[in-house]
Amino acid sequence: MKNIGFIGTGIMGKSMVENLMKAGYCVSIFTRTKEKAEDIINKGAIWKESVAECVKDADAVITIVGFPKDVEEVYFGEKGILANAKKGSYIIDMTTNSPKLAEKIYQEGTKKGLHVLDAPVTGGDIGAKNGTLTIMVGGEEEDFKVCYEIFQAMGENIVYEGNAGSGQHTKMANQIVIAGTLTAVCEAMVYAKNVGLDVKQMMDTIKTGVAGSKQLEVVAPRILDNNFEPGFFIKHFIKDMGLAKEEAVERGIHLEVLEKVLDMYQTLEEDGKGELGTQAIIQYYK
Image 1 (cartoon, rainbow, N blue to C red):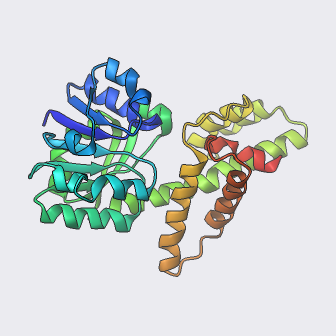
Image 2 (image 1 turned 45 degrees about the vertical axis):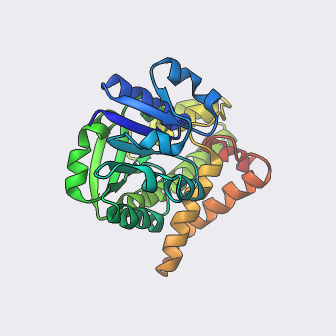
C-alpha cells in the first residue's frame, strides 16, 4: 500500500502526514481550510477538493478530525468515505471517537468490503512530530497486521487491543489517567509555590521517582513558562472526557476524579479558554 488518503491536518494530523511522506507514502489530503495545509502541500502532500476525491483511489484512508459529529460527516452520506472508498481498501480512524461510532463504522464499512480499524493515538503534538505516538488499534487482527507498517511511520508503541471499538476504549482509559495526573501535577505545583519551594527544582526532584509521568516531564514545563499554546486543545479534552463518562455511566461506573476534572475544564471553557492547551488547567487554581 503506497497511496494514502488523509483527512484532517490539524496539530496532530499535519505532522503525521509529514512522517508518512518521509516513509515513502504518497499522501493525498483533504481538510476544511486549504490555506491551513499549504505548508504540507508545499512539502509534497497532494491536495484534493473533497473527501470523495481524497479517498477514491487510496489503498488506505486515515482520518483524524475533531469531534464525533465531524467523524459522522466524513464517513457517512453520498459524499463520505464509506460511499467512495474503493472496495478492499483499509479505513483507519485515528480520531479519539465514540466506541459506539467506531463499531458502527466497522459494521457499515465491512458490508461494503472495506477493512476498518479504529486507531486513536496518544503522545500529543511532540509525539506526532517525532513519530513516537502510541497507537491503540481495534478491529480485525489481520487488518492490523497489514497496516502495521503504516502505523510504524507515525508511532512507536503500536498495540492491537481487540475487536472494533477496543482502540477507542483504550483511549478512554488513557484520558482518564491524564485527567487525574495533570490535575495532580498542578496541585503539587500550587502546593510547592505556597510553601515557598522552588517549583522547578521540586519538579526536577520528583520526576525521576515513582511520581514521574509524561505530564510532569512534558506538560508541567509549559505551565512554568506560562505557555498555554495547544499541544492538545481543552475543547477536545472535554470531548474525550465526556465520551469516557458516557461509557462509564452506561455501565453503572462512577468515576469521581474524571467527573471532577471534566467539571473543572468545562468551567475554563465557559470562561472562553477552550482553545488553550490542556496545561491551562493551572488557571483553574488561580
